[in-house]
Length: 142
Image (cartoon, rainbow, N blue to C red; front, side, top):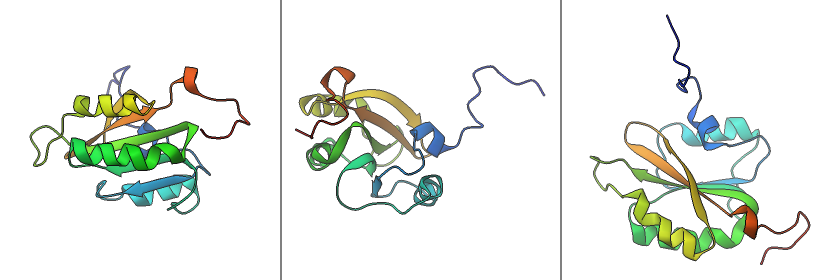
């Protein structure tokens, strides 16, 4: 069986999301069967519910809900952290056009830099702090 050079099917969803061991990650909402378990397995620790975050994976059902998520998670996100917004895919009930989420991120100093399929019903869009806006390693959060 020949393998395509751009075949990423061997990568797990958690690998695609960029979750790494020992990170402080919070997951909120219906992100799909098994994702919480798989993330915890990679982290080697439990999920967090408060404090500073390396990452957050949050299901949103509307642009308005995404705005609230940006407001609540942005202050907790480390400069090198990430915020994945998980939305229903096109054709699914509650579909959210992920491009409509980008302006809300930009207003809070975040840029979108990756998308990925989570499962047959959901996909994610990642927001991060642009390198130019990141403080030094020892700087306190603004």
